[in-house]
Image (tube, rainbow, N blue to C red):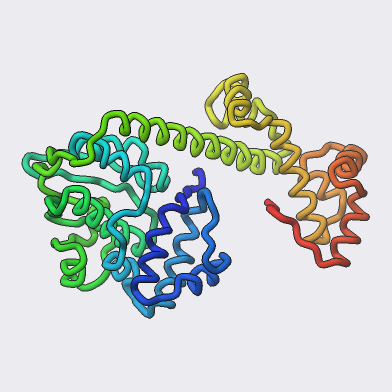
Length: 338
């Protein structure tokens, strides 16, 4: 199963909410290894959410930190998906446009909209195992939708998959509606009539521009996703001495030629990914273990020590023995090690 990621833009409103609640966000970021005031660009592993929310809960002194921060979130976050809403003809049109590109925010947001009579149901996906993230997200969605519809959006119910949470009256106070714990999905139920609410900012030309930007951003996410998948498969297959283009393509259920073409479109070559992984793995094993060179040769997918020695000297400019001796003497670490 591939690693799930979130876009860092999803965390910026949470940083604002921490500040608004009286908690120093820099202290939270420092506890998860980020420089004060700094959120790196791009995407980060969804598994990091657990560490982040643990740090946030402790800094806030708040057991139900996701729900707590939901009450301090800004209505608008400056996200591209918000502009898709605003430039669409109606709120419903904007929601349907935004759902096409929801992966720009998170791989866990497998969202869909269903209309069941007079009620509409927005399902948000599985959202991982940490309850603070979905509780915050539900509050963010309710706050955003209320602002987009000038207060016309009224949730009937919030469905949360986790069985244990905050007191029900606290959810009512933050969300403005009842909550069902232990539900089969994370979802919001609301009046379907609001889907026809016109947008005062509707602009077809702007909508086309926003959709074009969203398509380009989604293509970039998919490009990075493919490269990440190939790197993961290279790591798995090298253990068994494999990792050819044909083997990786087979694991991805696509012809080798198609994989080569897609990697070329992503601006990388398969052989370069192999070389990069072998180099980083070799450095990591040389510096962080006392494995014999013969073992490292095998683990990096080389058939002969002499071939490994030549390749390593070409990559680094010194032999494996020289690199290990110097690195351990200097206490060096390997950036981006596998």
